[in-house]
Image (cartoon, rainbow, N blue to C red):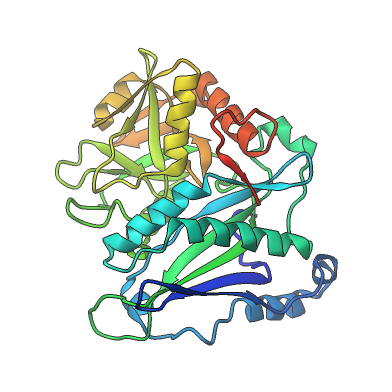
Length: 361
């Protein structure tokens, strides 16, 4: 299923009032019960879902729709064995969204409001039955095929045309069902000569416009038989930066787990930060530094990418300028598996959350 536009009925909206405050509302969109909706003919269901995806009170022509002047977040709420739902590190997503908005010279949406809004959207929809239930069978594949609630908070500007800045933006939060991001099959990656981000740009912001080039690169990679496109730095095309929508990791032959250091061209991933912490918990040495693609090809033994949607997804091989390195026999390596098992176990409530990352919805 991966991403789905089967939006849940309850949505959240808040608009900056220009005076330091936010005007908040929760809106209940048209819906039936989950069972009734599942039984609807396809055409009727699509009509109903289209009504939920309609916001006539928001302006069509504005800085966001015309110029990509906006930002967003992605986070998940996970079903737990006791029947509850918990969000994974929403405070960190809230802090990042506030910084993203300020980076686009918008008023920053407060982290406290972000956490409360995401919790409440999950709780209101769950009360109507729009939620997944924990399934013990998910443990068999380390929760890679498990279901969750995907939350998409995003900004939307006031009416406008012409180059300008948003001074009274909206923040909208919607929820949808979600499962595995990458499809089954090849997990090979290839470098792209496209440039995702440049120094002094918006690469560190989860900005709408940042996803145009990665989408093109990923689709080109898929058309060539690869799962993922890997971006190199804009200046030299020597150093690994990110995947199409995820952070990059490689385990070297000396046992060190390396990921490119953060800067203004790399998104500070929440899952990236979590994996670094879990790796250290497991006794794995970690480094955040510049990482040459030649080093990955010559010295890498395991490779994976991380992100809210991707989770931890292993890379079986990386191709660069017609040279290919295969990692761990084209299978998931032991360290990658242990990190995946621990991260997903924490998120789905079967591994103790020693870092207190999970928040009750």
